[in-house]
Length: 252
Image 1 (cartoon, rainbow, N blue to C red):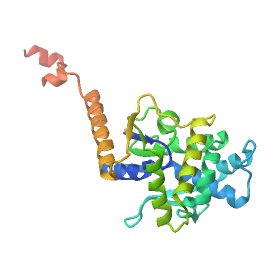
Image 2: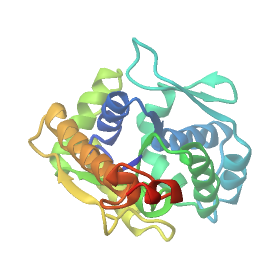
Image 3: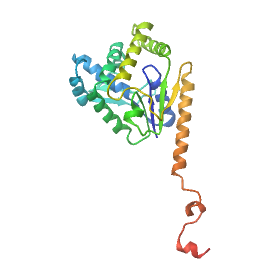
Image 4: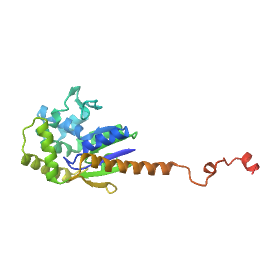
């Protein structure tokens, strides 16, 4: 199966996606890390986020981004940009303030969506982002739109940022998330929205374990549907226990 988890920033998509991928034995692809990697590289090069973003789109086309599988003692995949590990750097507040601007550039989206489809094309993958169920994998067997209240998301993100050693306040984080929501939902290409066939899951007040359990339930239901769809139809010669061959017919 292919599992698509979309939703706004701070909703807990990556955390849940990693748990679900581990439970299923699937590949986990952090698409947000790819946009953050491009953002970090653009900031380092002093590229402009104004205008048509053509220079950043060209960067995205040529940038080598590698996502190494998570190790036994790591919380997520190791992110490499042109051979340099940048897992912690892409989570900085500065990158967070600019990543939605990067993601709004059509050329960047085309480049990264193409890579994401190639990676997940064979199935057995869990992807989280903002356009997985609508643009990257519209045929995904499981689609979840994971959200939470703005204050809840701000509290989660503040805890994460403080844990990484970044000095930020609740109001700063909340305002940043609100601005990211505005940009993500209003961008011209593949804006953040719930796919028509996605299941809405509001994680406000829920524990990580409760959210993961709900998503796993959806995965089991989807797996059951696939098994039923692939099973031989009842009443066919195969399911009746004997083949429809001339030899068998003569013996009846």
